[in-house]
Image 1: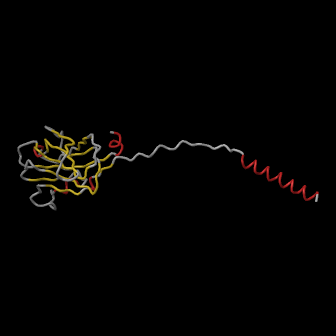
Image 2 (image 1 turned 90 degrees about the vertical axis):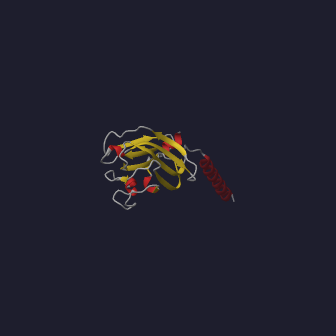
Image 3 (image 1 turned 120 degrees about the horizontal axis):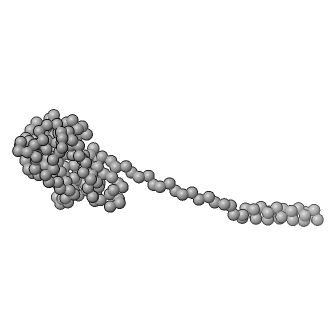
Length: 191
């Protein structure tokens, strides 16, 4: 019986040692988290559906029809004859998105056909419009010239419209090579 008690004591002692060693604190290492990845700015033009209120006389499928103004090809253009001062180009998106920049590009010929005065406006219902930027007396410095305009906008709109209020010259024709809309999540979140 003495052996049995010794064995029990030994087992009890080993059990206590194991329980104490299991309770010992171990050092936990802490690592700083990596900064969150930032989303790059993105040209969102391709996700919008283009409509215009005045089309090229040959229709939208013509060589200088309205789809040319958003085809991401700066060597093509949208042309209408005659220019009408209520002309607008509109991009409609499936959901709201905040546009923080836009690009306009002059076409290959006749500077008098370039837009001179315009408004960029946004809407969520297609009825009530908010002016995001107005340009007056703008002159493109060259042919096939691409210009980027940064705007302070944090509001997500479903509709963006470029109202062409006046052209540069008295030619009676309007032309534009490209209209692009850019969204920068960092700019729209930080403003």
